[in-house]
Image (tube, rainbow, N blue to C red; front, side, top):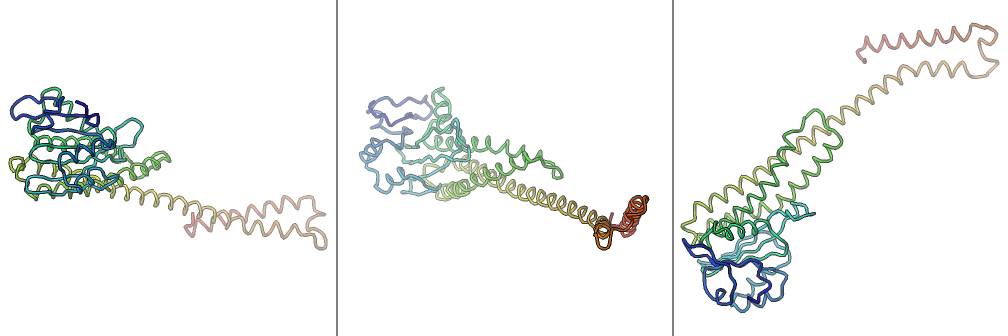
Length: 315
């Protein structure tokens, strides 16, 4: 088969083992799934040769789109989904797009970068396991996308739950900020994805009537994921408020102590300044014990100030 843009191709025969698509003849038949490289110009030409509407082809090839569902007719639909980026050196929350076009004859998916959910589905087919119909393949892809998202969220949950609300290190504060950003970026696409799956479920595509329970399960799973993300975003807001409160308390306590110290040393500084002025000679110059008397007076004033601050409950 000369189509280099096809990354995975499988023909699904109900209750029979899946067959890898290796020939042009298989592409002319029905019940096959192909996953394609969206960046290939040949992919666009192939879609045109299949007679797809121009608007559908444009949607499949669009550069950057949010998750959405579009019903083409009672038996066909177009779906844009997002999956976490588990490629080496990438951030999982930098979510990847996968487009899915379903017709009774075929399922066409496409992306630019590797998507682990797609690879997981293909791996099952290579082992003669997994989906055996186009509809069950769509359900399995949704399941794999949800599973990969959960694998990213789980360590974030564990980190947030492990935080002590009364003690935060500088490293923990920095990491909390990173986790917050990750959750916000995930939420940006997963909420529209939830609406897209909800639309798929409500539009009653004829071929999916026998898969209503499975589709509802994946919709419920994604709904739970979104609720979990919302909860931990709110939890981080509470933690950030607690951190701000702790910092404010520390600052207020330090300011208060500095005010107490200033209150004690203010009269002492006044006296030392007063005795240090050289107007008509410095007092006590002729008395060898004057310095000691002066220090004693300053000590006495300091003690009196401390006693008064304690009596007034400033200390």
